[in-house]
Image (tube, rainbow, N blue to C red; front, side, top):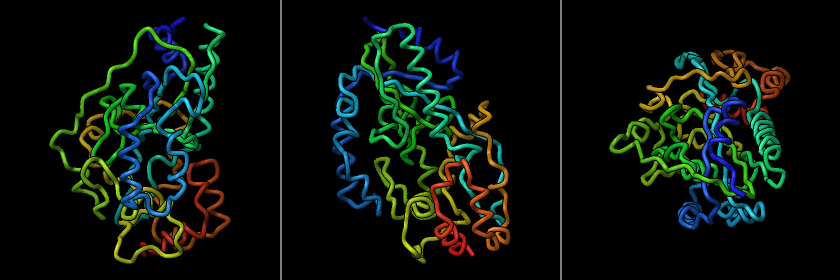
Length: 305
């Protein structure tokens, strides 16, 4: 039995999902080769965990046996939060009121249950960030958008302000989504805007120079003195803020869970310089920022002073 694309789109509307697409399950051999070359160039910094489970990342069958289709959903998290860059230290827009991982899992499990109510033979596996799978590659194959030169998935409807989640299912569909053409063409604004030169050719990122990586993933006690963080202490939105698709598609997120946590944004350098560990723990609670310990936030703050 095949599941209907139109029925899935009805479930999308019912569950207030911004984007949804489907791709046939396959082994992403080309993406695997690109990824291995990226690792061999040491562009992953000290994220050694990326070297694990490479086969699982590129072959859904190894994550969930009998996977026939890959459903990808995208949720818009854009807010019009404005940060005064000269006087404040900055936190990326994706740090919203709640950690999106939990919200996404709820959405995807609900979608799976509703599909099973229609066809009780359907089984599936929910993958949200922590599972070893190429979300962006599958988002592209599922027709949600294309890979921008800053390596992010860009949707023509929402730009790159989207979170991605995946549902692997053991059912085929009557129709599958079509991939979108690359919309970046000759635009190089994101490449030119990156203050550290982290955006390379062929849509690759050198994490060793990326402000987002340095402030979120890097665990060194000290950051390279020659690399300026440009007032960012958690994440970086520079290449996204400059993107024409993000400028054109400023659609505010309708999801209350993705509203910006105001207490974390628009805080002055003086505020962050004097913050206590207790206060920081209160601020980051429930957000994606909770994974970054105070020691490293303090390191990021001091690097900007």
